[in-house]
Image (cartoon, rainbow, N blue to C red; front, top):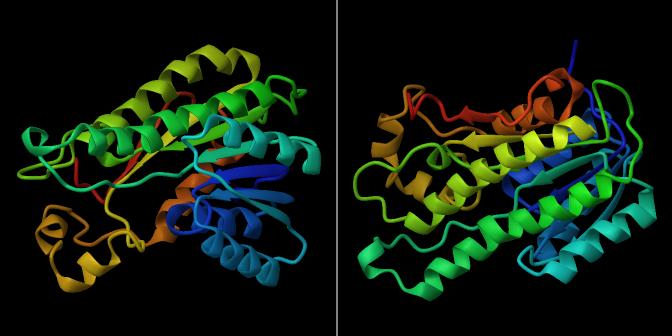
Length: 262
């Protein structure tokens, strides 16, 4: 069997990186419609054009949204449903890394900036998706009313080693795992399946310059596979978690880090 998805997918952080790769993977593997959400309008438009060119049979819309803004999140979900009728898959991928700073040197403003996007923003999106999915009829025992996949991090299940100064990022990604487990228990009896993925280092635009400069070589030496993930290696797992191939998974935090945390 191959992983197959259908219906409508709502993807935050969909303009680049893991979110974009996930949108392309869904389009390749059966999705009917995509709603791409991101704060970067120009990248959104570029990704939309790429999807329309490669997969002309897939309907797609974009929304420029800061996921920390409650009204904008709710409006994007509502407009997606008005356009396509339902949201069958939600992927909460939007996030920022923040400035690496140890706790004793970090400002409250820097802390709040990362928490607002990575923690509160994800929760706002999850809440809006759950509210919508609760109104939908079940599509069967394996598909239910809907599926949500949250993007955490390998630093959402353990602390970074050595001098990493990312307490805000680490705290937020732990919170993603927590809210995934909490809401998975609460809503799986009602047909909404929620899981998280915890990627390691991924070759995306966020760290591409560091990878090319060699400044992350020491981290890759701590990774048994010895390299960063290609983004498609993460979107393949996203596809699995969104499909009914993972229909008995509930509240999982699936670590995909090349063995870094082993």
